[in-house]
Structures are given as structure tokens and as C-alpha cells.
Image (cartoon, rainbow, N blue to C red; front, side, top):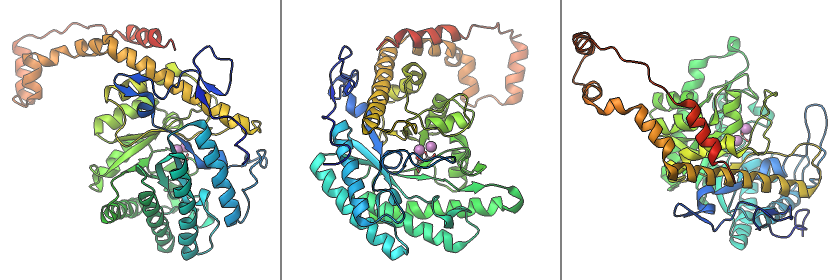
Length: 438
Ligand code: XLS
Ligand code: NI
Ligand code: NI
């Protein structure tokens, strides 16, 4: 029995139900284009925002009832947090969860103690995972909360901090591996700078590149088959984060020879903060061949920080889901609800209602995307737009047969005079809107 065990297991009841603690759209066994909804979406709930955040902000303290939060966190507190978290995951009916080492375990003063405490909570997780069937989408080490990481972890000016970070990642990667995690995430919280005046950018990138290579090497050494994921974010908490966006991450991976080893975990709100569309980040990751997983949340159009709100607009998400459907789903990734309540949402019920609404929203977007892909009109519109490239001229250019002068001569000789053609953008937008009817 815990704070979150008073709610009945949440079930699918369909769109006409009056029960707020039921799914209206998310029917995990519903088959969509040959695959169960649960397999399409691979929903995960996260430990940190839901169980390790008391509802504090920079102007005020915790508002939520989270009796297991404190300084230090004792083993008993970590255990009751675990109980509450799994009671919630199980009742919500999600197949996965995600965690940071320090948001799950008892506080540790030394690395040896860190190792021991993480193993203790790992044992508890393994037990609850076996009992509930909830699996691990990914684990990650928190390399940003402790004061020692104020200047970064892998990009710290102090090699002792780097070594601490290496140890934490080693322990957490191994724990993730033993728990059968599908991925391992590195979000570069403070891997960036607050001022270039005191920062050696080239050195820090090299440190970070080496760090990531070591992680990849260790992954292979221990036989972890999951995917290593970097989570791009442009800033916050640092002024500039090196993993700014998907393109910056790709450049970094290429520089350190890791494009085949590491993929990205794209977060909606991080894309917004980078001034990019969520669907752009997905398209870029697919183009570079590094698409991995999604942290699903949303920002607020009038706030410039990571507000981590629950998603509630299926039409906005549909262009992203279309891409997922075109790819026939995730490989090892999933939709992690890296989203948090507002400070006034103080009832345990609010955590359920928030997730239910969010899960129904991505389900709506999935159904719309499946219809859009099946209908094929959007795809045809795109194909027609590029049709010229299948013709003779297109093939001669992309096939590499012509050099720049050759193309120029040919264009002049043939007296080319291409007429502008419609891009059909409004029709494309209408197609999306038309299918968002769930
Ligand atoms: C912060 C990030 C963080 C990562 C995990 O903005 O989203 O929550 O997902 O470290
Ligand atoms: Ni995230
Ligand atoms: Ni975030």
C-alpha cells in the first residue's frame, strides 16, 4: 500500500466513458497496421519528475506529498519511493519505466557507497519488475545535480570530476544491463558552458568525445545489447549545451567516429527550446540514421524554459507520428513521459490524470498517422514533388556522371527554363488536420 495504490488499475473504456481514470483511446491490444498499440508506443513513465520532484521551483518549496524525498535519502526512503513508483507504473498499465541512478537510490557520500546503494535499489527494482511485468526502457546517471558537477562532468575542468562521472556511468550502465534495459541515455545536463571566457571549448569536446567512446567500449565489453542514446538540449541548466540539437550531436558523433554506435533521444520541449520543430528533429535524426527514442512532453509557447508539460495536442504530434509509422515503429526506443505536474496538482490522482491524458494524446496521434500513411495522399504529394529526380536529368546529376561544368553546359545547351510548381503546402496541412479525428 502506498500513496498511489488507491486508484484502480487504469483500463481502456473507449471514447464515451465518463470515467476519468480510464483510457479513451489507448487500447494496448488494439492492432494498428499489424502491430499492437502497446508495441507501437512503448510508453514509459519516469521516476524523476513523478517521484523525485517535490513540486519546488526557484521561488518556492515543495507542494506535493512525497515523504520519501529528503536530505539525505535513507534506504528506507528509497524503498518506499520504489514501492510508490511501481504501484503507480503497474496501475497506470504502462510497459516501461526510466530512472536516473540518484533519483532511485539512497544518498551516497563515496563511490563505494554509491555502488552499494545503487545495487540495493536495483535488487528492489528487479523484484518489482518481475512481479509487475514492467520493463526498463532506459537508465541514466545523474551527472548534473551534485555540486561537484557544477562545471560539467565529462567536460569538467577537473579530471577528478571526470573520474567520478565515469564511475557513476559504469555502475549505472551495468545496472541497466542487468535489469534488461533497452537503452542507456546520456543527457549532457552541464556538458556545456556558462561563459566562453573561462572555457576551452576544443578541449572540452575532446574530453566528451573520449568519455563517450569509453562508454561505448564498456557497453561492448559487458555485452549490453541496448542502444546508447544522447539527448540533445540547447541550454538549461548551462547557457550553451554541446548537444544543442540533433545536427550538433551528429557532427559530434562524426568527429569522434561514433555515428554507428550512438543514437539520439529526442525531447519535444528541447526541440522547441532550440527553435526547431519536434518533427524536424525526428526528420534530421532519420536522415542521419541516428533516430533512437523520444521524451514526450511539451513546452509552453510563452515560456522559454523546459516546462515539461504533458502533451495534449494530437494534431501537433501527428507529423512526428507519421514518420514513426513510416519507419514501422521504434527499434529499441519508446515514448518516455519526461513530463511533470504543475505545482498546484497536489493530489496523487493528478499524476494519473496527467499520464492518462498524455497517453491518450499520443494514441490519437498514432491512429491519425496510421490513417495518413494508409491513405497515401501525403506520400504521393511528396513523391510527385520530387518526380523530376527520377527522370534522365535527375539521374545524371545524382549518379555523379556530370561535374559542375557538365551540368552548366547541359543546362545552357538545352536552354532550360524551369517553371515554378506548387509545393502544395496547404493541401499537406489539410491532410494532417483531416485525419486528426480521434
Ligand atoms: C532534462 C532532460 C532529462 C533527461 C534525463 O531536461 O530532459 O530529464 O531526460 O536525464
Ligand atoms: Ni528528457
Ligand atoms: Ni528535458
